[in-house]
Length: 593
Image (cartoon, rainbow, N blue to C red):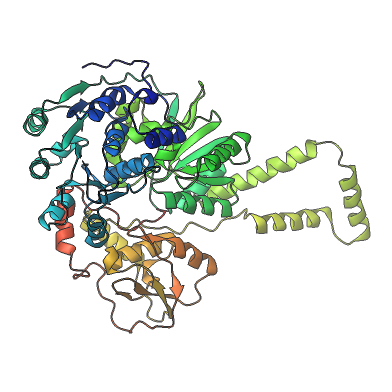
């Protein structure tokens, strides 16, 4: 079947009222071609083989009918979605969760490698209806007899060709073999190589073959720029960019709902008119927030992919990808929020070296190049502030009606021993206290390699040399954090999060002791209150640290190697899982860099 766009709307589909109402709340109006053809077929119980490029709306194409098939009274897994990567699994799970907000008793769980088994196993034992996961971890859970598919109604393979490229074909065959014959199956892929067609022929029953032609995209009017995360924390880079960028309205994309609140709060503390836009807001609150953005009471929105879909505010001049999306489809939707109504827009993205390959996909998909740039350093930002102040002074002097102020100045000059230069100097000093005009030289935050990421000897030597020896006379306080072995935390995760969030040299982080539900960490005495506040909200393994001072003392002993030994009984299996997931280690710490 070819790409044929009709006048069909979501209202014309036999979707449950709760799902349809939620789509309206999220701003979904006209279904895309893949949705127009897939949703009715899946609602009719047919198997589907869908071939469509990224950016065509495949998640809703299988997610909406899958939710419609669930019986909330049955507390067993009824929908299984398999994705090639943990990032895509998280993205798909959040999208399905947003579609299901008005469905009582329908929860979504995400399972993937490199994360603790405990919480994932608990979700499965609870009978979560929707499971989204990566092949390696799903196989592990099947082998442990924790993932039970007896009541499964719908099984979906998303980005099947990518799973083939990553060597998951045998895992996929094993998973599909465990799916009951009665379950409906859907396979979606951007391309259809022979191995994928063979897979579909083996496991799909008389599927409807849907082919959506790639959308021809015009040369983008959106300028795309990228900064490699290095030297500064992402939060520092973000505030600097917003300070020097002449935006009218800006939309910042982060990965989770919690991140929307954390980033928005930090921006507010830095003086920006920012607000979070997350699924936690009801429809009235969401509409009010968007209205405030249009009116200028808010200039920056911090949002996740799902809630920002359908957002049409022509005043948005800049989109910032603070966290990269889990799939290229979402990237297209993100940057499409700017450059509206024939205007030009700018899309900025932060990426780590291991994410560089994604930029090539973005360039091909948008038919546009991505320009690399550097965030202003401390000296450049100082010069920008000084020039901005001078411009403000000149603009003020050009205004009329200075007479009262001039009279006050003349009175001061006559009645005091102060000169005009001294008064100007004092006012400049006050301005400097409020907003520093001379910033200290940047403290370089070195990017900690993710577990499994290779570094050559020279690089490791340079890092060790730059770090320097650990001070022998350091005086520590002991802090408790609410992250432990059961969350999958390791000492290196904690060190990386603290070092990056607090811009602290890792030499000044003392001994760490891991327990099941918490950990103890030594930090320098007299830690500033602002640093403590930041670290309270910092995350390790997607778990807030909730840092607090404790009287319990960590036993003084030689510090163990941060990467050595087992610390939870799962290191070998985690390494194997990362290999199966085709990733060379995902960042364990959820932090702002």
